[in-house]
Length: 255
Image (cartoon, rainbow, N blue to C red; front, side, top):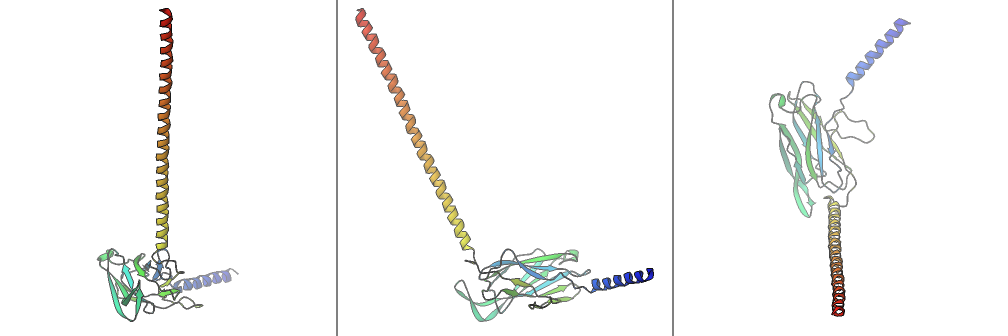
């Protein structure tokens, strides 16, 4: 019995080890918005690139932008230690952005590490975010697929280019996919700005009203004080007159 139990335990451990070694890596190149990525609007998205190797650094990242839903405005944020290159291409069909026709759009953004030694690129056990401002986001799709290439300093290239199919398991090298949310009233957020403006104006009016009320109250208080002073002066003068009349009458009687 003991031998059977021991054999089963060893067999189970062996199976677990095989499963652990054959399990796929879960750290993929991905893209996520900072806030919301609303259809028809603009957004800042982060391409998150983890290093999946133990003895090599990631020194180059290439992201292909969708050509079926081209983005006319693409502005990468500078990342210390990395050189960025933006590639534009002619569009087969011009797109319209804020009333202007755009004949070309960004089709690729490439980041290349510029450091040296251990300070160059993404080291094992670390990841790097690459922020990009994009827009206008399309209104006729729920997601944008970005294919990415990750190059290590040992010349290995990992191709994150496989789109996720609905109802299917995640592919081994999934392409970064940006999920879009429902369209907002204004892609620029002018509704919120107008609301803030209205709120600001209301606040200014309230302050103005308070100031006017304070001024009116101050003026009223000043008038009341003046009336009181005049009343007191009148009483004093009247009392002085009565006293003067009494003294004058006594003098006449004595005389």
